[in-house]
Image (cartoon, rainbow, N blue to C red; front, side, top):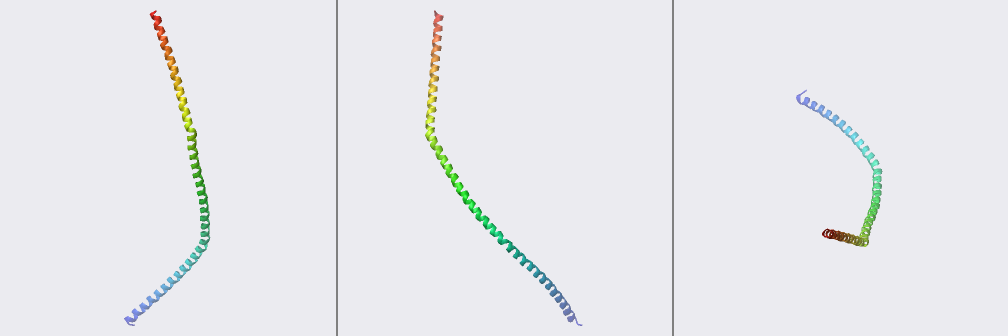
Length: 136
């Protein structure tokens, strides 16, 4: 056997081992692809009902948000009406109440001043009378 034949034999053995290795790798890859196909099929089967449920949930949520919008509008109207009622009440009753309070304060002040003036007059009269009685 010549050196070229030995090299060719070694090359043929390495080539055969390589081909066997590639066959094993391709078989494993085929199994992985088969399992991946089954996984994707299972995910597709489970995803369709889930998407249906999500769609139903979104529709229901939108309906509830529509109801909340109506409630918010009603609350806004109520607060506007309450504000208008409060301003009407203060304009209608507030002005006369302020005037009545000012009038009663004026009356009380006038009566207090009059009483004070009466007391001052009596005290002055008593002082004058006391001075006269001392002079006499």
